[in-house]
Length: 427
Image (cartoon, rainbow, N blue to C red; front, top):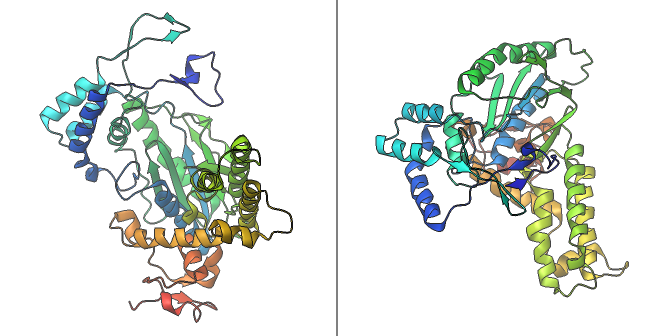
């Protein structure tokens, strides 16, 4: 078992059990995984977890594009982020097999899977003292490559919101968000409340527990909207807290859809990691400059640039906060004097300024995503781009701010149209 961050380690809930298997068993798991991959295409399109050509970044872009489209129409958005308690630990074995039968799994494969997940036992060892053996009645092995795949099938029939194009369900394994847009903020919350009984029934049927008190409701209001929220969102008769900012898939969203909270979070995390690694990076370190540079590129920069396609609408002021961290790192590893310009350090170390790096990263992302045949991504980048969308929608912001040719079926209107003609295709 490994300790959970921020949890009481004097309680069993403060630890996460993992499965440690011999090498032969791991090979068998990989073979079983290959057999199951052909069934992944049957999963609902809202589920992006552990699937080929899908990622957290693509799910985040999908969600932020939905929110941006609502703001473009001067609408409110209510985003419900659910906290599933012990998602992997509470998977009901018989229920999982029943769902795999519904997916038409082969009989022999079902028997192997049932044998794999059942009849397991565990023993706890503390300072050389061993507990008695206890059976595991529910849950799927954590630490196994099959565990996440099993959960995808178990949660495949999670109730989706169906309000035409005014709602969205975004899932990445057990990270679930539901969003509804409406001109009236209370109407948006009412739509969510109307859908919650279906979620409650599903949870009761499949023995899934959702923490209402740890779930979050984020209200993104339309411009100049001061109308009070009159409705309270309830789940299992518990109120769901309304928050000003919330984290989904590692990215912090706030009620104004600015990225200040997110930038501050990743900036502080990057600085913390840099301080922890100071003995390896400072002037007295025996590491050569090339290895220090590699530490930055592989450890610290990814913290700051994670899921950058979802926050292309970030302001230059916020983005500069991350550039300051990069400048600080380059000065640390080179012990550069104050009169050495940052541009010189970037040139000598062959590290691009962050805005240049992000532009290239986002260009690569959107080119691949645009050609993706996935149902929920295919039409995501086909809309009329207005100049005002620069501050609202990720793809529009990327296109309008880009200095490279990026073929798209979007039509560009407004003051930037003459500057971005190369982005427009016929159609």
